[in-house]
Image 1: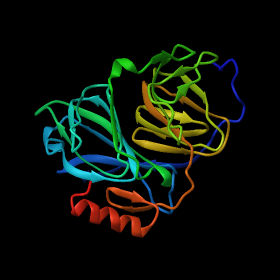
Image 2 (image 1 turned 30 degrees about the vertical axis):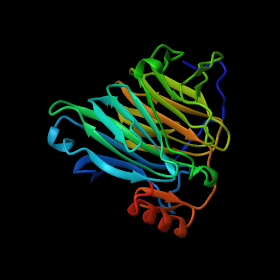
Image 3 (image 1 turned 90 degrees about the vertical axis):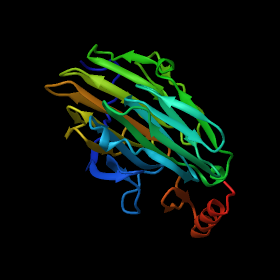
Length: 288
């Protein structure tokens, strides 16, 4: 079915990135789908990981206490339970469908530990950069329970859209997610489609955008994209995704680029090497 007001300028795929198996935290097995490098800069996005396993040994070690400075982290759970605790006294139990949005700002020390010893654990962690003027802001933390995020039927009836951040156009009846007002204006949608469905959504001009297919297979623009692959989108007015022979699930992410230098050292992301050195010193001296 064609969107009744469909733009003709579809964003096409510029690059397809496969998820790469790795480990993080205390031996948690995951797929690193995207990681910032000077050669591949999806500004303001810094990283996207997916963790998905039925084996407790793959996740039981969790992510013990570790620091962050200079960016935001987004954890989105599909299956399983994780407990967040930080040095500010925040505590959040993330269950299926829940989101945690944390602004590290000038510094946070936190842990994310599984609250189960068996069963499936599936979710994502996304890192989004902060502009220089916000990198030393006070840290902030927010839990977004699944029931507070709107789930909207697609216009062709082939599936649903969960609105996590930003606003879904929904034809002529926009639906706002619970996360709004950030400098980078992020859009984060989780789309579930049956076979032979279509998703079509306008995207802000100039915003960096990508689609991550995590189940099934889809046509993103004119490119066939399989499961566990990220499709980097070029310029254009909208994103179009068509499911093929099976159910398909994918994330749509877009945000305004910051356009500033990125200097990263592990969990610290700043604009200069001197700022990184200061972050390490502050952490080691207990100033977070």
